[in-house]
Image 1 (cartoon, rainbow, N blue to C red):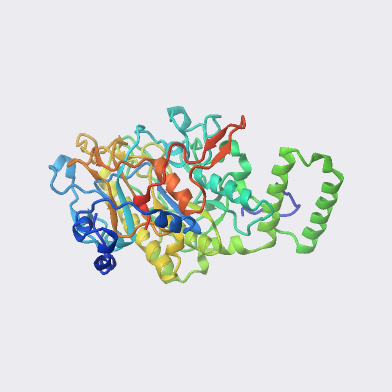
Image 2 (image 1 turned 120 degrees about the vertical axis):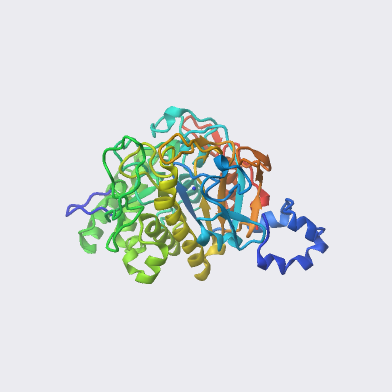
Length: 501
């Protein structure tokens, strides 16, 4: 890291109305109205695949850590008995025949922009973050909190950064290609063991996400996570103040209080040093040093990143539309970063205060947390982001992914305080929007209790492969591991053409 003397600062079925207008022309393609209304899978043609490659110039990955229940989000079961359906019902959406949880009226209005996948599945009902966001072929429990285990595979954002650099090795972007909000995952809890999966692993730490931090306080006491929880927490994901701001996290600290002239002098000295040490050109260590130095110089000499993070530049009306919560302001910052040229931005709805059963991990107090904290924030912010991207003409080139590590049990455990749903990975839901994905489409179907996939199973690796394709990266590409063995960037994942628009 470049160091300059001075004061330090810390830089997760049906068709849309617009689709109905196009149905008259589908007969020529051999697709009937019955096919569409019955939501029969229609595979994309090779021309569709070619057209969608690279359609997304950027990606916003929204990850509700701990994992939401599909029953209370995108796959409600209104005909199921109470122990399956739960306290909430379902409601109609902007796509005829498609229903979601009745606590999400805002989200219901943007379903015609989404591809909802109800048939996500994998074999690991754990907080397998590393399995969901990397090509890792098998998951082991100890990987959850061992971020630097040599078995870890690189994060999707790190792969995007690496692959982009291979295409343009001499280009240093004004905005880092791989940014994480609002802070390093699980760094604000009483058990801050850094989660595995969100680092570059064998690609090298220079491709780790650049994490931000947030200095706004929480304004609302969150519902309990566990029955024996002694301390209450004012969780900023439930509410924060308008003066809260993002800044660069400690892993991206840069010393900024220096004149441009002094910086030029030091850069000249660095250039002289380089010329006198050419014999080190083949050194991986020197290459790492140079990349970090270039990024530091870029961030120091431009205000683009700082301006992108400065949510205070937004009109109060816009900030309030996103929601004066940490999730709302994080998604707003993500939009600003993408608008400024950011490539891959991750937004984590993370644990705060207490790690055990934190965030969306509702083993206990499922309904209080859903009603008071989780669903209201999701219902306000997510559609606000989709609307904002659409109004700004950005959605067609911005892929937005709502994805978690697994789902939750179809049957409610009423013996738990506030009821509970435990981990479940046999069937869960993911939502995609923009960036070349289909609009107003539901992929897959689950059993009447929502516990098993009935058709069209989709794995997290398939989401990775499809994301790479949409970002203009060959999903079958490989990167070298520590032993120079070629590892596929999406693991066993395959491009899912039914997700493409």
